[in-house]
Length: 367
Image (cartoon, rainbow, N blue to C red):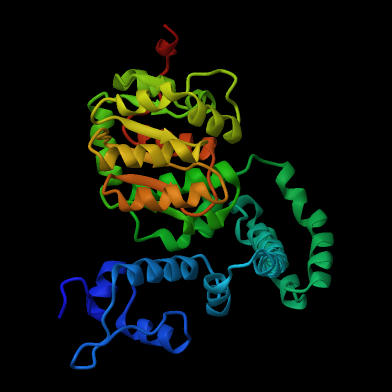
């Protein structure tokens, strides 16, 4: 066998991501993969070009594309075909969003009942009884349920909301997680009001331990833009001896778009990124390109952070940057896909800092 060729097992090992020889054979039958040369023993032989093609198929599949659409994407060449396929995918996207809206409405109704704290639970039995009479999944059911909130919500005027009680009911599946991780996830949920966020948060196995060790050692903390740094718990960080710095130190950068443009067009930020101290904690909440450049610097040995909190927002570069982060080998905390933002990135670091230090009764950081 020629050294340039790969067996089907070597192909799937090179592609990774859960790809199996059975899947490869199935893709051949669907014409997603072209015919390949065979050995004298009639085994399929593959090249690096096949590796790249299969990685593309796996990536599209992981993004939720159906195999029929993947085949169209691979076969599309002309501008007219691209336009036709784009229109079809836009229609599919709108349909998916409509389904998500309906599911979000149903989830909100259920959260309104299951999330009641102890003081409001006297109404829960009545609410559940009413729920049995309604088809909540239908639009008509949601409208009728909305009308019932007025009577149920009277109890909320008598006391402050008990967030932890509500979270204990809504996040009951987290019992197998560590106390610090549960606290981190709970704070992220409270920062955005979306319980489903828990399913998108990704932590490397060593992330929490690496972060706590670095923070206890007084590591350098670097946020990508001023709004991220402004949301950090400077009091606790000062007590830990952590120096807080801003990568793109431009007060006019207050949006993800502005952060992207600044990082791309002002080379000093890229140089500064490569000069960060070994063992630092990098908090990226706005610019996807900052996270991509950080991962590139890690791979080239120019950057050795203790932890990267990578939660930039965006619809193409951000998901790709997060996937690169999860492959980097560096301890990380991220939110897969397009979700994220500066507040969530700051909340993640603050939760880790709070796990080390009770709130100090002073404002020494101001000095």
